[in-house]
Image (cartoon, rainbow, N blue to C red; front, side, top):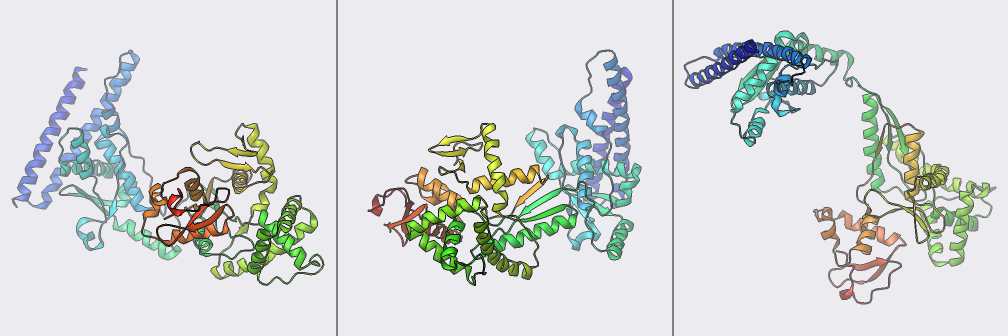
Length: 523
């Protein structure tokens, strides 16, 4: 132990002398009394000091092992343990040089300052105007580390911090051929920049590889099965700009993941199931009674949809028939299934024209695909005790019971979008074995926002409750009006007392006669 303490003292004394020497060199350099080449002596001294620290770490590990054998609590600090870490940053083909250097400097920071724990470092590329002077990349973390030490009550100069980081990398360069293959040299500049000069031989090899083989993706550490859910238009309705946006972004994400080497499944979760198909089938039966033997000439499906919707809203007998058609369709009655397929085919052809023009490929898997999965989902959730009865409905709460619950089964026994979404997630994880599911959709859920707003927060304006909508972007207002006007759950009331808009209530609420007395005023 006495020998160890003596060696420890010599190392500390050596480090103190080194700092004094660096300070003197910097002082002389700024006064012009010493050339820049003298910094090589500084780096040489730092290298020698690093070697001393390494020898010290070996002695401390030996002492720790001996103390462990004798049952003595170890006196070696975590700081010393950190100093003994060896760099394990492999050089890979077609790797990101910046990411590689970030790993190198992360190791250097953790070795130089183990008391900071698993502190990571960042590396930035140098402006091309200054590459010849300051190198290809820079690690500028010394200034940030200086502030961290200051907050801990320790005063450290950023230049000294940069010197400590650089000395670790320089030491590795002398013993690590893989690192020396990438980095030519390291320089430190005031106030605390560590400049990295890449090996011109290595850079030349990378450029040659690109010229010969083209731009290739980096090596994939783990191939994932990725499901990308995008586009998702509704059958019998036109594809609007939101669907186009999702289509283009989703295709871009898919192409990128495919380029990287992942197993990508492009899913088009079309809206091809639900109540609207009951009214469409009922209207088809009335307008084209021979549809089973003669293909109906439905050229404008959007107009056909509007006709059926008008009848559904105004004719109670037709509405009752429409619901009966939904039940028959969900039983997969052959005649009703054929009518449904005819309607879907008309929309599908129109959608495909757009996909072909955009050069987008998709695998259609609409809501109808999950009908059997929804039927299996309900007993699965009941068995796990996740469903609650609420006024005839079966609902399921998320982690936050203060939010709106999901309706899994309606009071009439039907399913909802919540049911199909959950069934889809379960199928994609359990059957598709997806490692990663990407949903490309608009983050603004107006229907849910309006329900929460109108039901639970009287006398609160929408902009006060949801700060997002304070942005200088009025597009959301048109989307709100659109959702209100086409959704049967909302009813337009009297003109607002302020502004040009109208009041809207939930359809099951009492009509508002006086705008000034209403609790539900939309901005």
